[in-house]
Figure 1 (cartoon, rainbow, N blue to C red):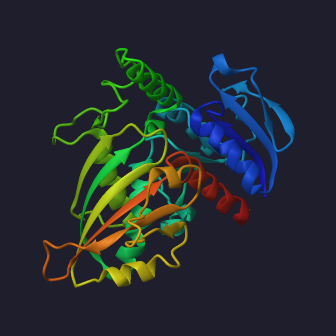
Figure 2 (figure 1 turned 180 degrees about the horizontal axis):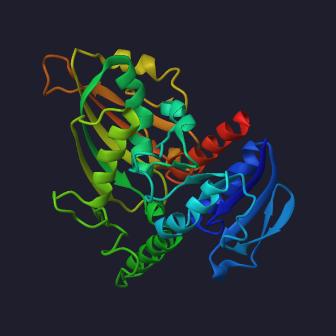
Length: 336
């Protein structure tokens, strides 16, 4: 039982997904508070058949909270998460604020749930792209030992929030009407286009999103030197990210072994129908909890059998953000 759950950033696109999942999973919670920015204060939202008024986030409103789920940006998390932790509560943070803090566990429950117990009041939710990657790669790594990961991502507008999703809709209509596509949220037109992920390019030539995937993957797998190469791309999809993954192994591995693994891997669904050329697609991943895994085949550039290719799709707002955080909260509630 969670005595008092607070959702910080309740009116944002991920916050709204938190609320949907609470309705669907109905975890044992005694009290729910909804917090957001001052401009959203006063909004009324129905939560499990009870109308709750959104309040402005403040230390006073967070007093007495036992578990808080944050999705309001890194600056808000840095300001308020330590307050809750010092008071004996636990924060599950969806921002990048604490992910690489060595004292903060970075958790995907299906993969490293044991790390939850190591928290000091703050638990970090990984980047959505990292979650999608590891829901596929972690079971394979446990079973066969992955030597190297190369991944290219196809990231939906949902990863940049509701305004980015609205921009994709508007630009699509404008383009089809013969009008100019104006980019205001993204740096380039997103409709009928794709471009390198919109995070800043850093000193090593990789952008922030790519570096997050590398660093977070190593931390979650407890493999601090694993070779990982990443290219992150924004594509004109409303929600659900996809990834093309190439894995190198120490020993030969067959596609049949990988398919057998995903017949029973929690949180994933095998979609690998060669006869119909039916593999993971964002349109199928949209709105569901499982990460779709398929297009499993041997890497033909590796005649030694030590390479596998696969493709995944997963809902960025569900398992990539809200669901993962709620699963962590449920684990905390079960431990109380």
